[in-house]
Structure formats: C-alpha cells, structure tokens
Image (cartoon, rainbow, N blue to C red; front, top):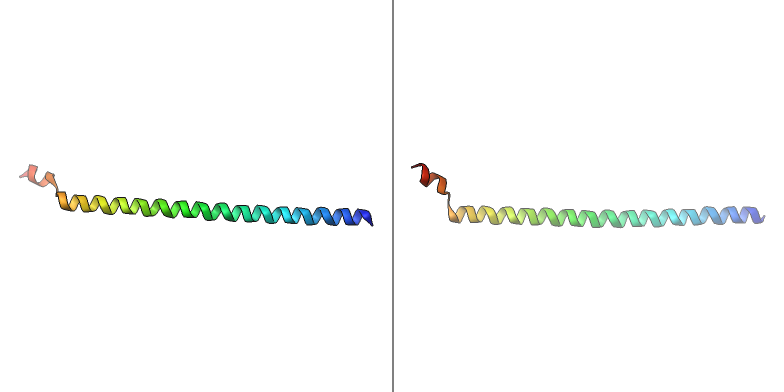
Length: 66
C-alpha cells in the first residue's frame, strides 16, 4: 500500500513539474514575441523617419547628373 502511495506521489509531483515547465515555456514565448514585435515597430519607425528625411532633403544625385 505504501509503495502505491509513493508511486502516486512521484507521478503527481512529476506532473506538477511538467506544468511548471509548460508555464515557464509559455512565459518565455510571450516575452520573445513581445521583443520581436518591439524590434519590428522600431525598425518600421526608423524606415518612416528615413523616408521623411529623404523626401525633405531631396536627392542630390539628380542635380549632379545634370
């Protein structure tokens, strides 16, 4: 009887450990996705600013060719 109880406790504790690993994995995935989205937004903002600067400053290559 005690052997079954010990085996049952071991199985239950391993299941709880599995749940902890699953929650930790989900947390890491959410954090990585947040960083990825933040980097994409930052990259897009840099591209928009660069396009705005190019539009305001104009292109000197056309003036040099003429």
